[in-house]
Every structure is written in C-alpha cells, then in structure tokens.
Image 1 (cartoon, rainbow, N blue to C red):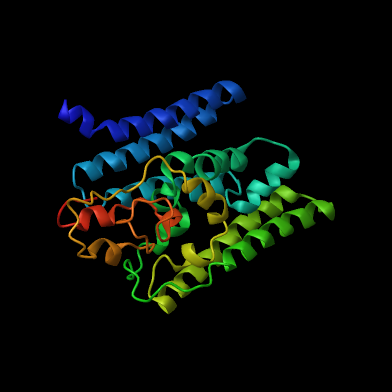
Image 2 (spheres, rainbow, N blue to C red):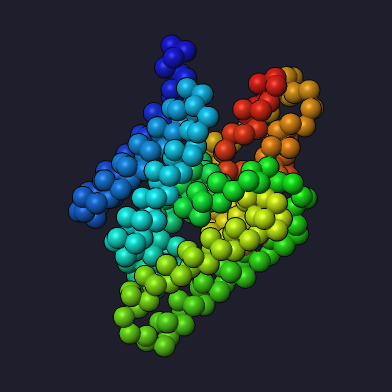
Length: 275
C-alpha cells in the first residue's frame, strides 16, 4: 500500500495530461493532440518518478525532454510560435489551436493544479538558464518585477499592431518573432544571471508569461507545505530556493508564494524532512 501511495503523484499527473490529450484529440479530431499531451504527460511523470527514486537530475531530464520538444520540434520544425506572441496571434484569429491550447492548459488554468510547475519543468528558456552557475541567488531580490508587465504589454501591442496594419504573411512574421524572441530571451537571461548572480533573474523580472501564471498559482492544489512540528528554523530551505519563497509559511500569502516552481530543492535540503 505504501508503494502505491509513493507513486500516486506521477500516476495522477500522467492521468491528468492523458485526459487532456484524449479530450482534445476527440474534440479537435486531430491525432496530434493525443501525441502532444501524452508525450508531455509521460515526460513529467517520468521526472517525478525519477525524483521519488532520488535521481538527482530528475527535474533536468524533464526540462530537456519537454523544453527541447517545444523549442525544436514545435517551434523550429513545425513553425509554431509557442511564446506569448503566438498566443495573442491565435487569440486574435479566433482559433483555439497551438499556442492558445498550450497557454490554457499550462499557463492559465493548469496552475490551479500544479502552480508554476511549468517554470520548473518545461520552460525552454529556464532549461538553458538552469545550466548557469548561480542556482542559488547570491544577492537579495530586486524590486523591478514590474518590468515583466511592460514586456507583457509590449507583446500584446506588437501582435495587435500587425493585425491593425493588416500585415501580409503574419504567420511567417510569427515564426521569425519566435526565433528572434527566443534569442533575445536567452541573451537577456544569461546577462541578468551573471549581473545579479541568479540563474532565475529573468523569470523574476522579465518573463511576461508569469503575468498569466501568478494569479492561478495562488490557488494551486500542489504546493510545498511545512510540518511545523518538525521544523527547526535552520533557514536552509530559504537559502536554496531559486525563487526566494518562504516555504516555512503555509499561508497562501507567504512571501513570493506565487513564485514557487516546485523544483523541490527546499524539500531535498531540509535536514528534518519537514517539507
């Protein structure tokens, strides 16, 4: 019975993604959705399984499996802009396809279940940034998170301007926007990581996707909680958290509560298994 409970999390995650895969396959009459969400579900479930088995690179395996799939296969090979500009593009065309489905599942409604797990396990930008040397922030968090809202608005204005100007071949423009946008994200992310000595500086201050992720993440079903009776207030969990979350506070209003990416570094480093 304990063994069954132990592996309930990966089984549940796979079941959720497989349900989405089947529903979209039947609703859209497109086999791609069955493959797409089944692949992502299997990848995430595998990562959780490896984590339970104490494989230290479990999360990195998922990042590479999902991140490279979305960046290389969907983005470059299939010419789909899976960044926020692609979401606005499909939204304005009134098509529930590609990026709109992706955002609905992973970044708008999905966080009600798994919070900002997307950022920790599937983001192709963070996939690269997490290879940098500053996994634990070495400087206090800056109060410049407002920049993400500026980038969010700029992405919306960019796509809206294309439609208002009736630009020709917008799909091709979206593809180049994906390539150029990703290159810019990587460049800015790497520069910020070294400037602030923090791999996740881009996620905290620049990434426009967090504007979608944060509201639903507040109500996330899956979240790290602290067993107060075991906690010795050693502070190790706060020191290793890449997103500066106070996980010892079980309130949903805890410091940087909607920033948790479920990386489980706090859980792995807790000397008393209090998380």
